Image (tube, rainbow, N blue to C red; front, side, top):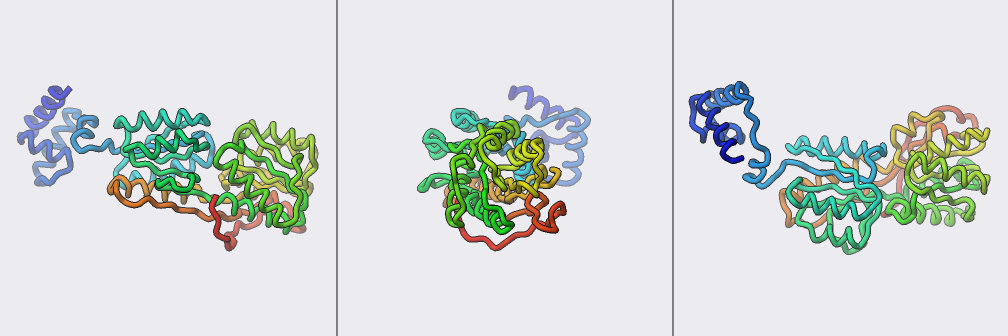
Length: 355
């Protein structure tokens, strides 16, 4: 392989009428005169020469690739994160490689093993579950890593997290303010990072306001997906009659609204609905769905910034960033004369809290 690459560089040098060293300098973006650079680029284009990326990565010690690993590439919140990360790393000269890890923690460990073999210069990881095996692998890897999501105390890794608990509290406060007294909760799996944080937030928010938290008003979907939401909504409506339903993400919220309206109930007149993540899905629904904005794009940009800093300086102290939530109010929680009309999203003052 090395012989073929050298001969190709030699052909470019011969066509350009310059030395092999000059070709190497131009192709590696090192200082060279404008006339020589122009000759080399023209010759390379005419010969269809493509630099050997693997050989170059060995030479400079980088692949110029950043990996983003998420549980479900089809989830709108992860799509938002992908675009935000891509913008930041592209400006720094890196390519983004996307990977879907699913719900199995073993897949996350396997991914880290593979990436450490030289497929990426760093990874941004957003796992649904944090296990002892994942923590052990994260803390032992030589690969620069940033985690989007909560980590156990004492784990010294760059970390960007949402404040789900405060987000849930804001939603419950708004629902009570509109006169809702029986607020149900449709969650995802409670053994996940978001599921655990959002359930804790729901129970605390309801208790602090003297609202009931009976078992029949809480349903755990098998996943954070639309299909799982449809099943969970059927269970909820068969066992309870809430006047408001808080959902752990927008996919669940859209599914819940479909089931609610199919039973002849009106949103928001009979049942108010609130989602989480504030994705385009919530805005495009009919009626549009009020949703807790957890700063997915902001978290992703901050994670990319931290990762680039870690790549440049592996010895720097770890950082933790908490992104504050806010409520994007829409038709699904409108009250009184405002029902059926768009309600302008607002950013209320927030109390500090960590999910």
